[in-house]
Length: 178
Image (cartoon, rainbow, N blue to C red; front, side, top):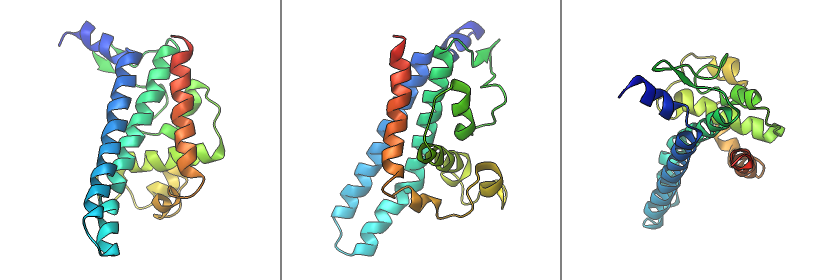
């Protein structure tokens, strides 16, 4: 790949939005697979195990998808993510800190939406890929999440709708200038 081609793709908001759609599609596929397998067994604990097995990975994919949407908005606002053949990211933001990234695009979000971003960012950095986080206190220090039960919070009455509202807001920002 040529440097210019790399920069062109890396700075294309369409490419980032498309990748977000792929990640969301795959997370839905995992949920469907877990539900299908769970429906074939009668013991409730075995049913739950099928759903729990994909829960963290699904949230990781969803977190990556939201990160891609935020980066797409960043690009649509006239910024760059790639320069001279290198990914430069969003200035001042470390990998997958989507709860910090959101402020760089000026999107107003609710407290529940911020909690969703913190949970998904934490899962994207470690919990969805590895059995431990990068440090024993990284949940508290990096994301302001004090306990490992935050994944259960996701299933509460407020966080699931907040996730869908957040996706809608990001997609709306991308369509605004089309």
